Amino acid sequence: MIRWAGTRHPREISEKEVSSFLSALASRYRLSPTSQIQARAAILFLYGRVLGLDLQLPDHVAHIRQPRRVPVVLSPDETKDLLAQMTGVHWLIAVLLYGAGLRLFECLQLRVKDIDLKRHEITVRSGKGDKDRWAPLPRMVRSPLTAHLIRVRNLHRLDTERGLGGVALPFGLAKKYPNAPRELRWQWLFPAKSPYEDKSTGLIMRPHLHPTSFQREIRAAVLRARITKHATAHTLRHSFATHLLQSGTDIRTVQEVLGHHDVRTTMIYTHVLTRGAGVPSPADMLLGPSLPVESPRLTTA
Image (tube, rainbow, N blue to C red; front, side, top):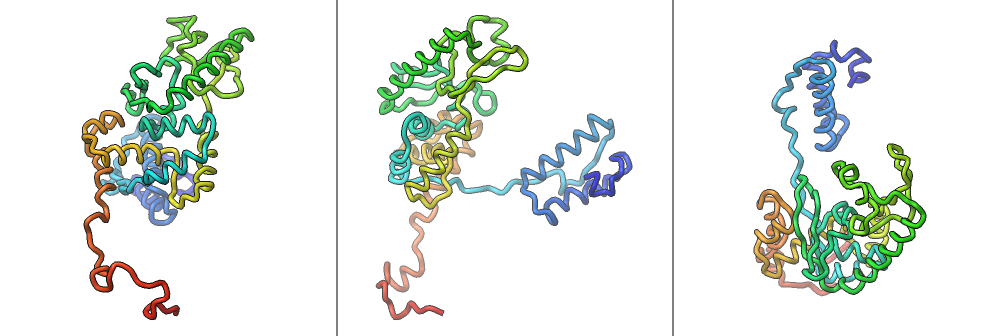
């Protein structure tokens, strides 16, 4: 903004000019609504918290609305084909994303203690909105997940023998429970291959798997499965919700499992179920359900 205003000090830039700058982000630079919101928040922070000025912006600038997007959802066959292209830990993560409706970060931040194999439940700690919730643990992963937990336990034993500092704990729990970072129950369910040095404590600790590792793998799997949809890790969560509703699960239950604050957020999946369904195409009514491949009506320009 400072460069846009001719490298003047922010105190010398009028509210009208700030409004013009934010409008230019949309009309001239074609920034997304998210980027516009971030720019507006940064400017308000600069003026309000740093300069101590009360900046008044017009309503059309203050209320930037993000467009509503229809989620990408895989069919059951596409989901099956995608999972068939994945192996090892990445396959296990993909099954949990689809089978439990987890967000990628929620899955990667699971700890050993969050898995209940007897009740077939997953406890999601501090999910979106800093809320805890439960999610169903797919029964099909009981055996491979048990084998994976054994590998995690063996890795934890080796880390302990090497004198590693364990894992990071949230909310200062390491001070309250000094031994907790080295306890098996607190270890990441999906630990990274390499440890790192915590600059604040100097301890060598093991992080969880980085999300880019899985994101690269799922992009490659989508290509191998020849899926033309723009499928990502979050697509598996969308598919989980849609397939649950297709199977007759109550929308309130789906809302609770997904961790949505408002049922209206969950209702977008009901729109995915009904889009195009039961709406006859006028072309089918006029010309019939299908045309022969070499129809005389089909000509090239």
